Image (cartoon, rainbow, N blue to C red; front, side, top):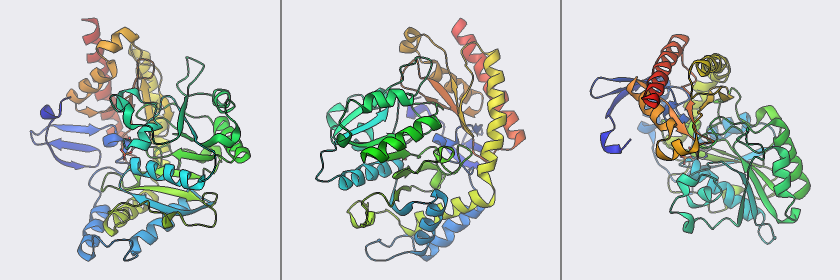
Length: 417
Ligand SMILES: Cc1ncc(COP(=O)(O)O)c(C=O)c1O
C-alpha cells in the first residue's frame, strides 16, 4: 500500500491499534512480528518514564549504566551456558552486521571467506546483512553494494515440497569447499519475512553444529524474529540443544517500545578477548533509556510467563489456521512454531507475477480490521504471517480468526470474479 494512503495511527493498547478516523485494527502480526508483549504495557511505560527522568544518554565509553548491566545479565541467563558477552546495536540488521564483523575479526589472517546461508532468507537491510540474505525483492538494484562479506553461498532445498534445505542439502554445498575456507553458517531457525514459518529441523541444526565444531567455522543464528519467546521457547534454536557461537537479536528484545538490537557472543568467539574491545558500536548503542526499556520488556515477559503463552495460544491458532485452510481454496496448512505461524498460499507463478495473492489477502485483512504480514520471495514461498502479541486472549483470538476468515472469503471472491 503506498505510504501516502495509509491510515494515520492514533493510539494502541494490548492487541488493538486505532487510527485517527476511528477504525480499529487487531494487530495480528505484532507490527512486523516485534510487539511480543502487546501495545501500551503500563509497567514498560513507567520504566521508560522513570529512566528518562534520571538519564537518557551517557556514552558507554564514558560511563557504565545499571540498566545495561542488568540487561546483559538477564540476556546471558536466558541464552544459557557458553555465552559471555552482549554487544548492543539499534536494530536487528546492525546486530547481524556486528556478528559478521566479529566473525571477520575471529578469522583474521586465515583463508576463511565463505559464508553459507539459506535460500530464502532475510537477515537485515544493512549492506553486510543484506549481502548474506537470499531475498531477491529486497536486493533489487542493490547488488553492486553487496560484496563486502567474502564469498556468500545460498543453499536451497532439493525437495520442491520444502521451503528450507535439509542437512543433506547443506552438506552438499559445504563439501564443495575445503573446511578451512568456511567462515560461518547462518540461519533463522524459523523463517520469517522470507521463509514464512518454515523450520530448520533439529537434525539440521545439530549437523551444522558438528560441521562447525570439526571445521572451525562459526555458527551464527539469526534470532531477530524468533528470539525472546515468539516460538514458545526463549530462542528458536533452544529445542535443538545446540549452542551457537553468535546469536543475533532485535525485535522482541524491546517489543517495539524503543530501537535496540544485540549480538550475544559465546566464549568460543575471539577466545581470551572481549568483543566489546573492538570498535563495533554506534552512538546510541547500549544507552540507558533503551537498556531500561528492554529490561522492563524482558521482565514483563518472564513475570507473565509469555513464553508458555506463545506455546499454548500458538497451538490453538495453528488448529484454527489448519481448519481455515480446509475451507479456503488458496490456503495451505500452517507452518511454524509457537506464535510464529505462516499461512502458505497456493498460486501459480504466472498469477503471482501480476498480482501476488499474499498482498491481496493482506489488503483485504486490513479492510476487515486485521493486520497480517506478507512473507516470501516468490510464488513458491509466499505466505502471510499470523503472529499476534503473545498476550492475546482467547476472546481476541476469536476476533482474529473471524476477521481472517472474512478476509480469505473476500480474497477468494476477488480471484473468481
Ligand atoms: C530474521 C531477521 N533478521 C534481521 C532482521 C532485521 O532487523 P531490523 O529490521 O530490526 O533491522 C529482520 C527484520 O525483519 C529479521 O526478520
